[in-house]
Length: 103
Image (tube, rainbow, N blue to C red; front, side, top):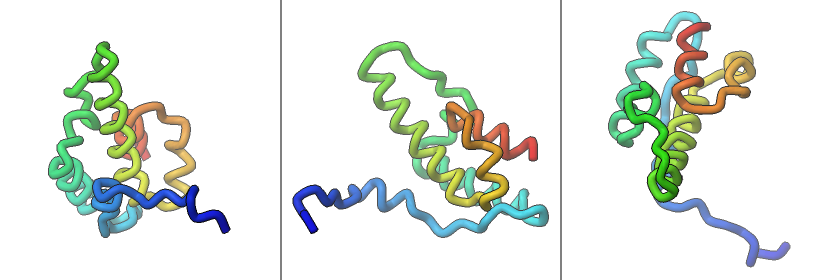
């Protein structure tokens, strides 16, 4: 095994791994509350809600894309396989959020 290619997750990536309930037909309000609180704490809720729009500058766009990807990861970590399958084609975290609300 070649350990030189092994990449250890960054501290910020490891901090995104939170213990949240899996979304089920009976717990949407609780799930939404928990996910919203995590996204707000991570300063990502504005991206998910669409109020932090995709910028045009290269540097700003790179930061926004990273935040959007982190938000998608957080949201999808609380989805079961069936629900996850319905959001896999979503391009942004806002699309994922809307897709989950619509289920």
